[in-house]
Image 1 (cartoon, rainbow, N blue to C red):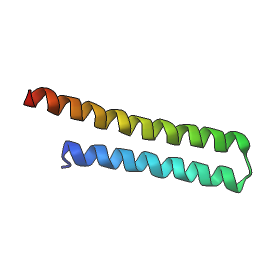
Image 2 (image 1 turned 180 degrees about the horizontal axis):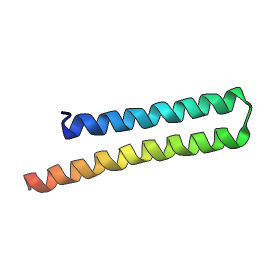
Image 3 (image 1 turned 45 degrees about the horizontal axis):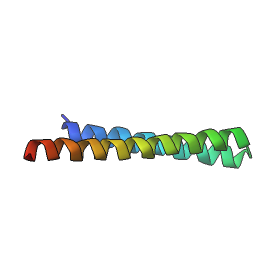
Length: 65
């Protein structure tokens, strides 16, 4: 079975792959709405990763204090 860390990584990579595919299809079809939604999804994914890293650092800081 997968560890929690591996499962999280697989989910994040899968999400980024799907967003990249959606963005590529939107660019191919010249869809402005699709491009905007794809970029919004990409931004949300990157922001989520930032928040996850920040929360992990705070939890480690609390454990060490």
